[in-house]
Length: 225
Image (cartoon, rainbow, N blue to C red):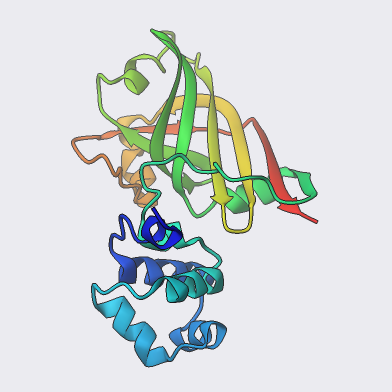
């Protein structure tokens, strides 16, 4: 298989992914066009139609959008992130709590780590930051309902909550770890916490809100010199 064949497998919704990465960087079509030596009209065509351009154009677009060709073609969807080699002379930077909170403030997907009934457990959740706490939703009777209850009033289980971002194109990224007690939000506070508008991707009936109050926040960033 040639390099072009590899790039063009699993193309997915190419135009939607261009828009996503353009919005991520806050770029207009005209700005991306200037970076790629393509016309803004052609970029609009790619965003609005299912066509996939030749490999050279894909590579130029990926570079302009600080992504990889696989990011645009969706050919790495079922592969874990970060399989490539590290950047030359990588630097590991310790982040202060304020910077950690800034990074996770937009919400997204994080991982809840706790000692479950079957041993150490890590589960992904959609989360938002609300009034300085991490908020996510789950189902009554599920593992994060039963395993995060002590059965004793005023006694909470300490858990870990991790969020990370990896930029494979730039060989850099960051991770944040929040540690603190998990609270099952009582019924009389649900309306207020619901203002966070956290929506689980998994769907289904998930009316139970869980709130993590940060007691310790640490983070690391990897970047090249």
